[in-house]
Image (cartoon, rainbow, N blue to C red; front, side, top):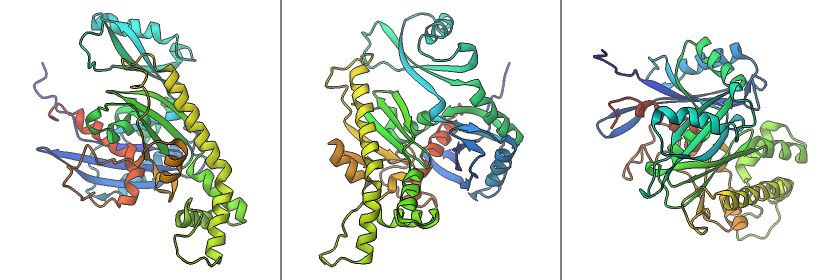
Length: 378
C-alpha cells in the first residue's frame, strides 16, 4: 500500500536543433509562477532535423543550461522534455465504446492502418478526446507515434545529464497546452510555430489537437536569404532582419529615398519568394484540413479555421502578422503563452522579456504538464 505518492517537482525542457529552453513553474493556491528559467544555444550538428546526432555533447549542454538558469536554482532531477514535431505522426481515429482493458489493444491494432512504420519500431501513445455531445456512439481517440530511433537518443542524453524524465512529449501538444485557454476552442484554430529551423502548423479544435505538419521555411532560412542577397555575414543579416522585418516602406511622411529605405526594400524583395512559399504552404494545409476533417462532429462551416495564432522565436518578425492576415484573409494574432498561467490582471512575466515569451511557448507548455501531473494540482 502506498501511503505517500507525492510526485517530485519537475521542470520543462524544450530541446530544438539550435537551442534549449528551461521553465520551472510552481503552484501555490490558485497562483502559478515561474521560479526558474533559462536558455542555451546548441551548436549546429549536435541535433539535425530533430535527430540527436551527438548524445554526450547534448548532455553537457543540458547540464550547463541547468547551472545557468535565472531566479531559483534547479534542485530537481525530474524533467518533462520535448520531442521533435517533424518526427511525430498524429491521427484522430474513431473507436467503439469498449472497456479500458480492451481499448489499448484495439487502438494498437487500428493504429497500424495510419502509421507509416512497423508498430514495433515506434512508441505509441493515445488520449481519449473529451466529448461535448453525450449522444455520440463512439470514442474519438488522438493517437501519436514517434520512431524509437528518434526517441531513444533524447532519453539517453537526458540520463547522461543526470536527469530522470518524468515524461517526453511532442512539441505540438505542449504548444497547444500553453496557447489554448483552458484547452477548449469553439472553432478550429491554426497555430503557426515559426521557429529557427522549421515552421510547424498545428490545428486545434474543440478539446484536442487535430492536425500537424512541418515545413522547412524558417526564421534562419530568412536570415540566410538576406545574407546571400546583400552579401553580408549571418550576424549582420540577423540584425537587419530584426530591424526592418517585412515592412517594405518606411512609416514616414518623408518621400526621400535614403540608404535605410533602399536597404529595407532590398530585404523585403529578397524575402518575397520565401514569403510566397510560406503563404502557399499555409493555404495548402488549410485546404487539406478543411476537406479531410470528417471525423469532427461539426458542420462543414464549423470545420473552417477561424483564426491563426503565431508563436515561436520568429513570430515577432515585424510585418509578419499583417502580411499573413492580408494574404490569408484570416485574423492573425500573436499567441499568448501566459494565458493559462497569468490572470487577465497580471502583467508580470517573471523576468522573461515579453518579446522573448513566444520563444518559450513550448517550454511553458511542458512546465504546465509538469505541475499538472502532480496529484495535488487542482
